[in-house]
Amino acid sequence: MTMGDKVKGYVSPLYSADSTTGSLLDSGADELEAFEDDIADVLNQMFVNTATWGLTNWEGFFGIVTDMDKPIEQRRSVVKSKIRGSGTVTVDLMKNVAEAYANGTVDVTQNTAEYTVHVKFVSIHGVPANLADIEAALRDIVPAHLAIDFTFTYMTWGALDAKALTWGALDTANYTWDEFERLT
Image 1: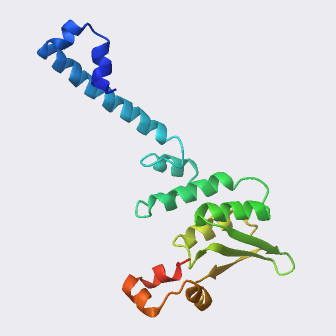
Image 2: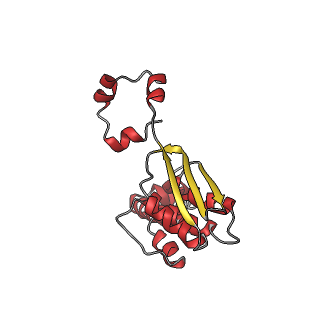
Image 3: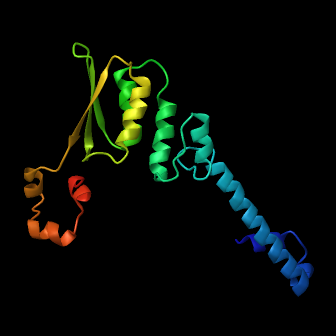
């Protein structure tokens, strides 16, 4: 049922049958529909996963410098990591923060003897586009005396062979080098 039908349902059929009154009711229905859309849009800004123009407010709340040149998903990842990155610093917390950015599985290990934290990107091939953000978020929570070491995974020749991908097929697909590195 359209908003116009709903509005006309509130008045006597005699009024909605009149062309002038019907036009007024239709324009009022259009305004109500636009108002409902605006309310839904404002509600979306209250949640990081659906925020668009309200993401700037989230970034400000967490002291994040807004970079409008970054894709919105990367900006959301920064906010999510700030939300997740509170509490005692554990391997699980570091993993949780890194996965907020990477949008995939990350293995985190701590080598206490060598004062390092090792982050391995497991489910994503290549270097994540927002690696600098991941590193900055981890640097915010990892104690200063620990170094952070990253390991990336790539498509192997064996994986290419298993998929029966030939140079001809890859050439036809016209991948960029970054796209090729991220093939799974």
